[in-house]
Image (cartoon, rainbow, N blue to C red; front, side, top):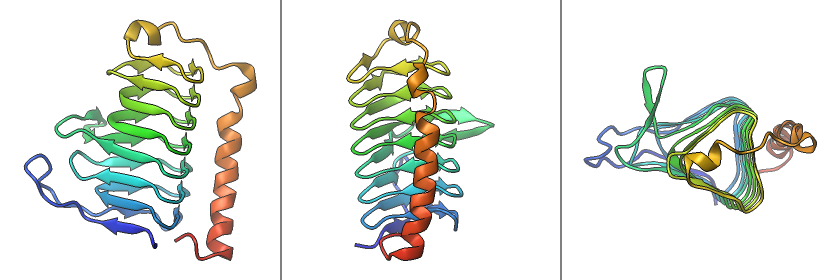
Length: 200
């Protein structure tokens, strides 16, 4: 199935009708569905069977060189948002972000530059700083704010600000993790687009 790009239907909580805005340098795999005011920057990789749905909220932004792997859901609650530079956002990925398979990124949410989200992670109503590593199976929710350079261990739950405030720094062995994955998916996406019909 080809990727689907579609406008959002108007409802009381989201009266403005918008279509996705996608850089010509982005690559998007078959089966992914992108709805509403989703702004996809240059060199973004979106894999297979993802759902990115800005149909009930303010706009989403996927910053440059981010990679959204497979079966990821990005959505946001109606009438709730974060504000940056005078604009309201349902979800804001600052750039060079990784989101692995089967994760749920539910806004309002901010992911800082060079932050890594592992497999089967649940994020809901949070601000996560720059250069963070959130490992596989973790849950971060309930309006917590995670500072820059912090590490959430596999399966760890962070639901209180007091828990977020005592998170450790990213261990040395993971400090280069996200950069390597971003580089790999940048190159992989370009190769898919050049050599196959699986990506647009």
